[in-house]
Each structure stands twice: as C-alpha cells, then as structure tokens.
Amino acid sequence: MTQFIIRHFIPDADNVRDAQVRERYGVVSGIVGIFCNVFLFAIKLVIGLITGSISIAADAVNNLSDGLSSLISVVGFKLAGKAPDSKHPFGYGRTEYLAGLAVAFLIGMVGVEFAKTSIDHILHPSAVLFSPVLLVILALSMLVKLWMGAFNRNLGNRIDSTVLRAAMQDSINDVITTSVVIIGMIASQFTSIPADGYIGLIVAVFILWSGIGIARDTLSPLIGQAADPDIVQSIEDIVLSFDGIIGVHDLIVHNYGAGKSLASIHVEVPDSANFVAIHEVVDEAEKAVWQQTGVFLVIHMDPVSVDDEHIQQLRDMTLSAIVKIDNRLTMHDFRVVDGDRQINLIFDIVAPFEYQGEKQQQLLKEIRRALRARDRRFHAVITVDHQM
Image (tube, rainbow, N blue to C red):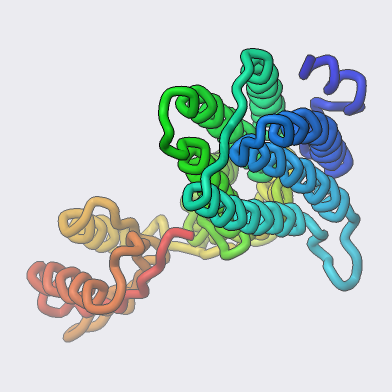
C-alpha cells in the first residue's frame, strides 16, 4: 500500500533532495493521517458513548488530535516548501520544525485534559459495558495505527524528516494506549475497582510522553544541534580528496530545515602553492560537496608550511605532546615565531566540549608544561576550538 501511494501521488519520488518532492511527501503523509484518524475517531467515539468508557472516549479524542496534528504537519510542509525571498534568503525550511512543536504542544494539552478526566472517573466511577465486538473494533484500530506507523517511518526515512518520524512514534504510542484500553475493559468485568479510570490515566501519561518526545526532537534543530556525524565525515572526505588540500578543520554546519544546510570549513593548503590554481581547486571542492551532499559549502584557505623541515619537526613534536595528554585532541594552524631566547609555537586545538572553564585552563597549563619540558624556550600560544 505504501509503495502504491508513493508511486501514484508523489511524482519523481526518488528525488528527495528537491524541495517540491519533499513537500509532496509531507502533504501525502498528512492527508493519509487525517483520513485514518478521523475514521478511527468516529468509531471510537461511538464505542465510548455506547459503553460509557472514559478511556475509549479519551482514545477517540486522541485520534482526533492526531488528525489535527496531521493537518498542522501539512501546513508546516507547505510553508517549508516556499521559495527563498528577500526576507528569508535561506528559505522557510524551519517551519517544519515549528509545525512539529505545535503538534507536541497540542498533544500535551490533550494529555493534561485526559489526566483530569481520568482522575475524576477514578473518584466518581461508573459502569463500563463490555462486548467482544467492541474488542474486535479496537483491535482493528490498532492494525490501522500499526500501518500508519510503518507508513510514516518509510516516508520519514526517505526524506529524513523528524516530523514524520514523530508521527510514526505517535502511531506506535496509540497502539500501546489502545492495548491498555482493551486491558481496562476486560479488567472491569472482574473487579469493582474503577480500572477504566486508572487505564485512562495511563493513556494520558502515554499521550504526554509522546508530546514531550516530539517537542524534544523538534526543539533540538531549532536550538542548534550538532551536525549529523555522517554529513560531517562526508564533507571532510570530499574536500580532502582534492589534490592540494592537506588538512581540514573548523567545519560549521548551519541547518535551515531538513535538506537545507549552509556550511563553512577551513582547509590547509601549502604556502608555496600557486594562488590561482589552488583557488580553482577550492571552487571544485565546494561544487562537489553541493552535488554529493546538498550542503552549500564556503571554504576558507589557511596556508601552512610543508617544505620547512624544522617547522615540520616542531609540529610533530607539539602534536605528540598534545595527544599524550588526551588522544581526542587535534591540532591545526600551526605556526612558529623563532627566536634565540623564546620560540613561540602558535596553534589551535580542537577539544571535546567537556573542556570548559577551569578544566580548559588546566588543559592549557598541561600542554604548556609538556612543551616547556622539551625546551624551556617554547612558549605556546593556544586557541581552543570545539567541534561544531
């Protein structure tokens, strides 16, 4: 079914880097979600009214909120697909994350209301009717949600969408909550304890947890999460594959929505290289990164000495001292200002984020101490970077 929908409703479906194709994926997912959730809402609401079950009614309203969530996702994808303009030169891709945040807020509100209603039902219990037919209908709703989960997972993985993956997780949560509802219906036949109210409270907790999870996933890129390690490695590998580029560092990736990233990187090139020739190499590297990853890359060149044997020995000695302190440290932009009484070793190190404040100062003291132990004339001028 999923492949049928993709094939008939998403033209050029394999071109997932295209903004319009991505938008179609989101819209199709949203429309399918609206249809399925409204259908389940109608069935469960009727069952809840007939049986007097607050947990089934809660589950029905949860499906309605899921339908509204799907509608918000559609709007979010439509806005995210808008072309860049003078006010937003990098496009509107982040509205997809805002849509996910709105969905999370809506789910959270529904969860709170369900919790209130369930507590009231525990304090003021009422009888719950039981019928095998109702169980069959609820079981069928679980199958629908399982399919929706698989459907959104497939589409979410295709376009790398946190919103669609969140929709997948929400569907799986619905399967769990409906299972709990069925358990509550059966339990109510064997005990006078208001099991339905307690089960409804469990449903509310699952809904709240789902909302928190979606909020966490959508807030992270909005706040500024670290770049995908695979993308980072791909960019570095592509750039380093070009002759004349001997090192890379200070890669920063800015996310403006899924599939819309701007990056900058420093590359080390021989200081003896022909300026015009190496500039052409840099241009080719930028184009290659764009073609292979979809990331718009800007490269800054750092000339370094590669022919001076004395500087090379000092560089190797300095790196050896740094790695002995912490083998996660790397070094770049190494320069030397030589003198009779003092030799300035100027360089940057890339350190894990744990090196902050006092711990960072202690690291610098250890590096300087290690270098001075090799030659008291060494004076280290160190800049600390962190991997972005």
